[in-house]
Amino acid sequence: MAETKLEAKMVEVMQRRASEGTAMKSFNSVILKFPKIDESLRNCKAVFEQFDEDSNGAIDNEELKKCFNKLQISFTEEEISDLFKACDFNQNMGIKFNEFIVLLCLVYLLKDNAPGHEGKSRMGMPNLEATFETFVDAFVFLDKNKDGFVSKNEMVQAINESGERSSGRIAMKRFEEMDWDKNGSVSFKEFLFAFTNWVGIDDAEDDEDEEEGTV
Image (cartoon, rainbow, N blue to C red; front, side, top):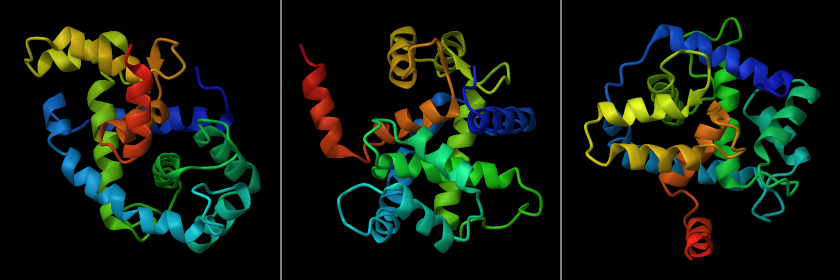
């Protein structure tokens, strides 16, 4: 279940988006978009570096407030603090690049929920916003029962629909990669973290993870 006010709000937004439906027809159509997503996320690196004022590879709470100010994102101190905690996945008191992508996507969705934002470029980054819409579409495609979470069964069903012979095994592997807290259901935030790994935006870290993962 959602742990914080922020996460409860995210579940609400995802349920609303799920009720609107998705144009995606198969998991393969998500994978085909990876190169475009990768390019869009890499272009975001300059934005990240601009706000990482001390160039230590992570954005701290103060730098994040300045970032929101510059991007004209009006969130309360409490909301910024909640977002920071939610996206500082390694709890190392700093938002790294892949965590920054997740954070911006959550901001995009939460702003989408605010009145008066319909049909506008919400952050002045139309390409990135199109990528975020792809993330939402992919999640909605997986969330068959529209409850704002993806379960193991939903993942199996989605991969089965793509017609791959080894679909069951692939579905389990993908699901385990997404279910960070191992509670059997995947929130949109967990899905985003898995996605940033799949498209390989943090190559150096991925390589380390793979080495650790080989027995």
